[in-house]
Length: 292
Image 1 (cartoon, rainbow, N blue to C red):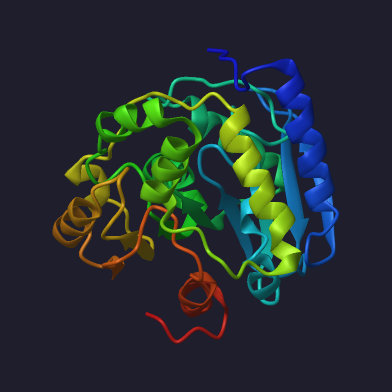
Image 2: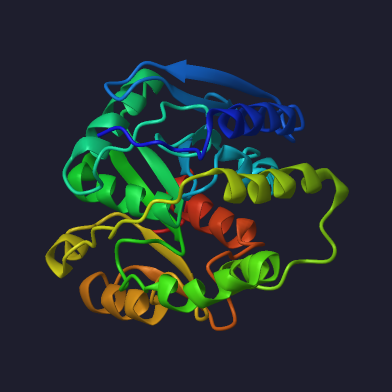
């Protein structure tokens, strides 16, 4: 299924140009790949030692791989990072949105893994990218060595933000800012200068893209129980999109080996998680790891 990703062709071109400018400031040396897949071209940013254990990064909805810029300097010091622009989002991959139900996205990721020469990898996913990582791990467990998930969809109940957001839209720009605060928390006042272009890009994407209005499939308890790989889930207690307490409860019940980091005051956007994710990846993926 093909769906219009942006509100106009002009906004699509503007976001692509702005994204390219942001990528000029990627904090470590990188290469850019365009992989052929059954869903069309897929854009991947690669950085870190090619001989290091591979980590595939899957960003969330209404975003692209620029969202990983605060994290890649640390992670690429020990791992080979492969940041994938999700199809149907605001990156440089094909503007197609196959249904989330079914195996279309897993088959697409098969092509991405094969194009990258990966037999298996660790996955780090946020929000919709967390669902994508979970879906792939459930369908292709032999290809997923570890899962690090930030506010993932696909486990906890999906909340209906529209009920709260719709009245605020009547208040124009103020209402839109209020909705953004509900999702992402209060706007930071101390954004480093080198990250300002990235945050400006994400704000521009929010204005330019057509959001997905879909129910995201959830893994069953049985599917969760079969996820034998190491799992880290980082969730926020004030998430207005996903019921984080339900996420925690379901993992504790169906996948008790999962490590859950519950941030009571956290929103759907959880900054400054690079260090705990790094510790998790080092413990489970490096050859000298002491983890069982």
